[in-house]
Amino acid sequence: MPAFLKLKSEEFHEAGPAAPSLTRDILFEHVSFTYPSMGHPVLHDLNLRIQPGEHIALVGENGAGKSTLAKLLLGLYQPDSGRILVDGIDLHDMQLNSWRAKVGAVFQDFMRYPLSVQDNIGLGLLDKKDDPAAIQQADEMSRASEFIEHLPQSYQTLLGKEFEGGHDLSYGQWQKLAIARAYLREAHLLLLDEPASALDARTEYEVYRQFRDVARGKTIVLISHRLGSARLADRILFLHQGSITEEGTHDELLASNGSYAQLYTMQAEWYQEKAGTAHE
Ligand SMILES: Nc1ncnc2c1ncn2[C@@H]1O[C@H](COP(=O)(O)OP(=O)(O)OP(=O)(O)O)[C@@H](O)[C@H]1O
Image (tube, rainbow, N blue to C red; front, top):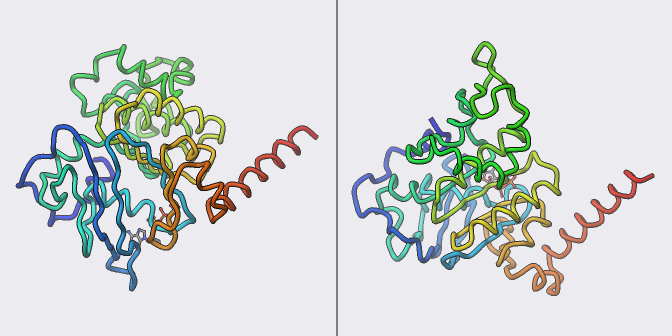
């Protein structure tokens, strides 16, 4: 069972209106959220409008609330106060299954299914599961095809340590399959929470760039600590202790010389130093 279904709270609605067929507009209105085990809110009075087809990057330090925001958007948790509207419909009142069917999500704790490569990618997509052309396109986009070609039975290779003869993959290879699976869903909204953290910075950048190019017209929310990938987004939101403290394009945020600019400069210097020592 996918991780996000396990997280699902019992109190969510399965009645109510279905998710709109075309996601036009996502609106966070004064959203606050507190985990029951925490004494203070993780998100405070957050206001955010995501335009249709917009590519958003959510960045900020560890614990700023980025994943929590993504989970609220998926309907895994409900705000304590405020509301999240999709095309004007409160997520709380919507049939969550129909909403999730329109969202392709890759979380840090993505699932690894003890199935063949092909089934791992096409899982739950009856129309796509046996469509090799669609699967191959998704793999090329996620760069999964590079290692699949070298597996003993290519797409039919059985994955997972659970099976005798099952082939295990590296974390980064599993991650590429999860990205391919999300791409194949033809979702209106793609929610990518550190989808490529196990990949090196250059591969992450390439995967995200390709994803962005093929996903034109779809809304993308990317969470990444690598600001080199985040800079490809139409708009970057910098989260600090549960509030959006800076927002704009990469160039605008650099020009404003705030926390984003500092973090970006630090990362750029780090990569330059690393490249320098590699050449010594
Ligand atoms: N299930 C949970 N129960 C209780 N507290 C949680 C839970 N998930 C996250 N938190 C806490 O909420 C805060 C925000 O966490 P969140 O994962 O949203 O941050 P983040 O910005 O995505 O961080 P990171 O960059 O490290 O992934 C943190 O203090 C975290 O410890």
